[in-house]
Image 1: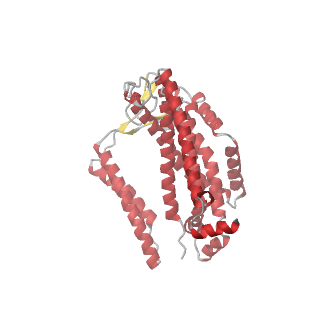
Image 2 (image 1 turned 30 degrees about the horizontal axis):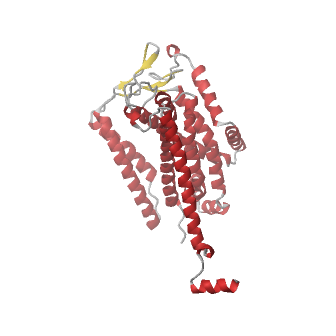
Image 3 (image 1 turned 90 degrees about the horizontal axis):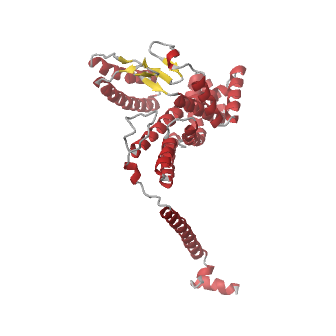
Amino acid sequence: MRDRNISDLMAGTVPFWNDPDKRAIIYQILTLALVAMAAYYLISNTLANLERQNIATGFGFLQKESSFEIGESLIGYSASDTYARALWVGVLNTLKVSFIGVVVTVILGTIIGIARLSTNWLVSKLAGIYIEVMQDIPVLLQLFFWYAIFYENLPSPHRAMTPFAGVFLSNRGFMFPVPESHPAHRYMLLAFAAACIAAWALRRWARKRQARTGRIFPVIRANGCILLGLPILVWTLFGAPTQMDVPELSGFNFIGGVSLSPEFGALLLGLVLYTAAFVAEIVRAGIQSVSYGQREAAEALGLRPGMVLNLVILPQALRVIIPPLTSQMLNLTKNSSLAVAIGYPDFVSVANTTINQTGQAIEGVMLIMACYLCFSLLTSLFMNWYNKKMALVER
């Protein structure tokens, strides 16, 4: 029988059930059919149940009036606006806390990770205690703790603390002055964008020059002058406007200036302190993955400790740091959905209010899933690009 199968295989007449390639195709077709049948069953039953209970489906509710206020918004919003605009306000609030949180977390986590490896006994132990404490306390409990600190222990607006002129701290938030609207600000922003492009081009040129000649160009000082000088020049050309929009107490709250709510402060602080503990361990592991001989060789060349870390250790450690760092960035963004527990109007909170008012639970949950999926995919794409850019090129 075995000889017959071998002869059939050689002759190309093997039955399909004995051909591994054909069997694999059949199994995939059967699996796809089962998944399609399960999806059809679930969707058809859901639609039938919705129709039986006279619940409308679709996303037409997005164009209806929302009829609820949102305490914090980066754009103009009122209760007469549509649900679509309300959800967009939630998206922007989530992006605000996630972007600021990621930037501050990376900076703080890097500092603590380097401090954990310090030769100073006290600095190293304090960094280790911070890491252990923050990692072992659930992030939700940390949010509750900071919210209680901000909301219950700060004074009312009438007795607000004033650390500086025009700056107020109360249980309504942190209020501070900002420049009044002026056409110069728009052109200063454009000038800053142009300065960023010029700084990037200068840094790239300096690297090529150093690789070709060995001479180091003072990139940091030059880029600092470009980034600060160009917007200041535009500001001067427009007459150097200095008018400020200062917060003032009116009734039970402040008007004018910019206000950061206690909910935003508690959410940002809780997410940053929690995630920075994990980032610190990632940075520590990445630095320790670099051979100690690299440090000795750099010190033998006469490089200062700061230059050794910046030019030798960190560039090699990044290949170990970036992949797990990406996961922590995603965790911070997804953990921001816990904002609903302390009343910060992020996307999940606004979507939950929309679901309660419209009854469109399936559509609302789908929007939440799609929103966080987009956040995660965009973050992963950027970090994967950066990981490839920073990868060591072997010769």
